[in-house]
Image 1 (tube, rainbow, N blue to C red):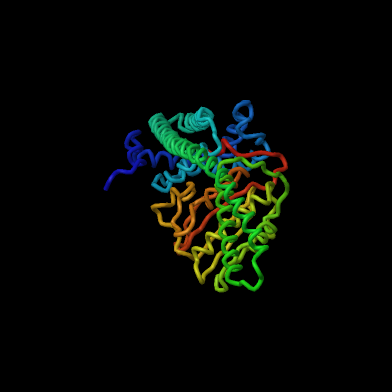
Image 2 (cartoon, rainbow, N blue to C red; image 1 turned 90 degrees about the vertical axis):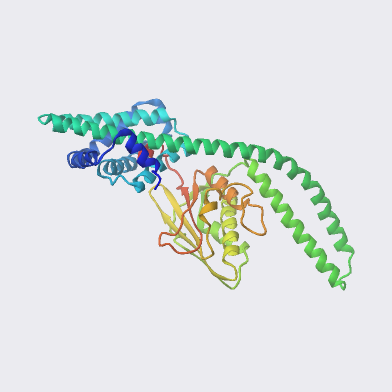
Length: 396
């Protein structure tokens, strides 16, 4: 069986079962100090103007982030150092790309932890020099592994993001030109259609029916053009308190679905307000609903489950359709990527763009119980009172 990247990295730094045992022993010594180390860690960050700026006024969230860092330290010393550990740590590098965190801050933050842990080792193992050396060596290796994983995933995601940006730039130039050119003939068709409708007698039902079908198709074409243009331009966002339950109900009224498709929502009424543009957030629900109803077909379920977290709301959007194959999940949010017989693949990319402009996110997350159907997890920040966003805590 081929060696995984994590196995290769462990072999490269010489991380052994003996190091694992040393870290487990160190965990027993250090766990009582996690809170103090977290205090030192964030005190150092808030002393430095550049790092403090990366938190965007983050003193409001530092209490929460200290808890996150303590969990990270617990995992660091307790393991298990397996592939699940590796995947968990990979998310940190990806988060750094998403929030555009300069990596020199991450190196500096890691050095604070290295220094504090080494001081603990020196104090506790002073009378046992062999164990002291073993503890220092094991700590050095695991922190080197942490840096290697973060940098690897940071580089991977940064390159992928740059490639996406280049594709979007080319896509945007093409769309901008075609979209504006299509507006003119569509406008002429709409005007002519209006005039013809006024001259057709009411008794000519067949002609009226076909004119109505032309009008529907012109509407579809106009919407496609609008979606294309929305993908490439930054429409000004409104910034107002928004009740997501109201937005959901508005989108629900606009989506037709078969009688045997059950659409339900839980927890929306209890959510705190988010801050944003209700029209664009409605578009998020509208696109997801339309995709789910199409995926389900004539019978099935579409569910929205809402939860309030410490500083954000989480929306789990699920349907009982066939789900998304693993081969296309990585490209799911790319423009023009579609598996539908009809459609051009703009719905999910537009959802992602709107959410990111609101400081939120969307990922495809298979159902934890392994059931069939698609499942998306959306997050939106709660309407801020102090205006902070977490950045450097991405260590945990």
